Length: 141
Image (cartoon, rainbow, N blue to C red; front, side, top):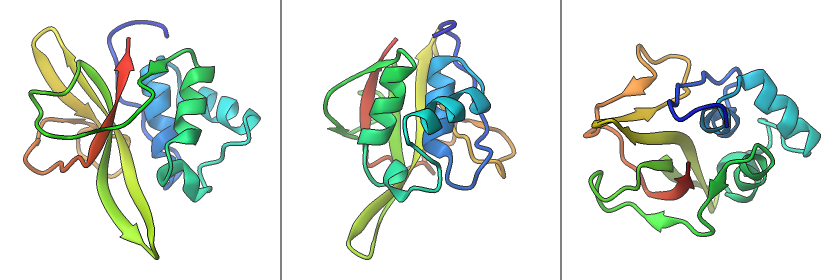
């Protein structure tokens, strides 16, 4: 990881939120994270990237980002650790869970969610009432 100040990375593919979140946490570009992911056999088009945690965990490990071994249920914004990978827009489709990956950051008294979605006016979100996390993975940075 290149530094502690985390910036949003915009996903370059409609299904690249896991790659973009990993890039943001590692402090690298989307292209660099995608190249690493592809070398691991991880592709944005694979629905497992946003319906299972294994691919993102493998990518983060390869990028040198340590995360907790388990997911924790979201209870409140105040109870989140300083860094977390959040599962939002959680839903079931044909019996399989799907979600959108975003990064939660608390540093220097500021709290924000880094959302990689291209269509957003700002990828640094503070509209916490609209974001509905289901669970999170703690990030150790």
